[in-house]
Image (cartoon, rainbow, N blue to C red; front, top):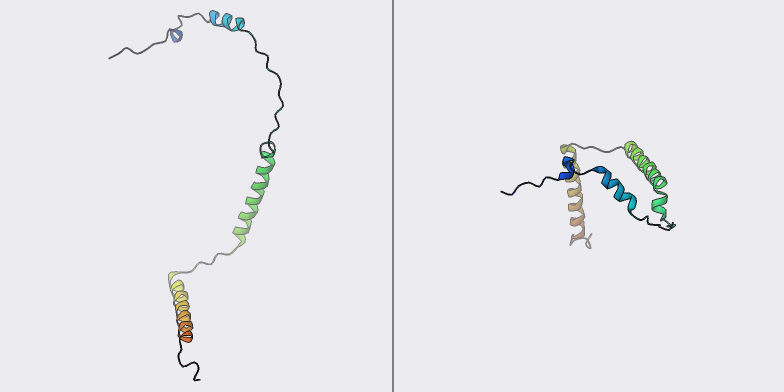
Length: 102
């Protein structure tokens, strides 16, 4: 099996003073100041988030006020049976061959 690599830097064998001197010798890079125009959704992100939160709160408030009909299985079966009966009656009236005689 190969040996694990152990960095001498972590063991303290390198002096930290040498690193500080190297950083001072590096030339400084002068970067020009540039103005970037940001889109509104970034600039106004907080205002947009506040408006969305208000809309969501209003939507939840309306949902909480709205009554939700809850039917038990017996009531659902009764309503379904009533709809089927109504549909069957409509089909019978549409297919009545004796309609002209009456």
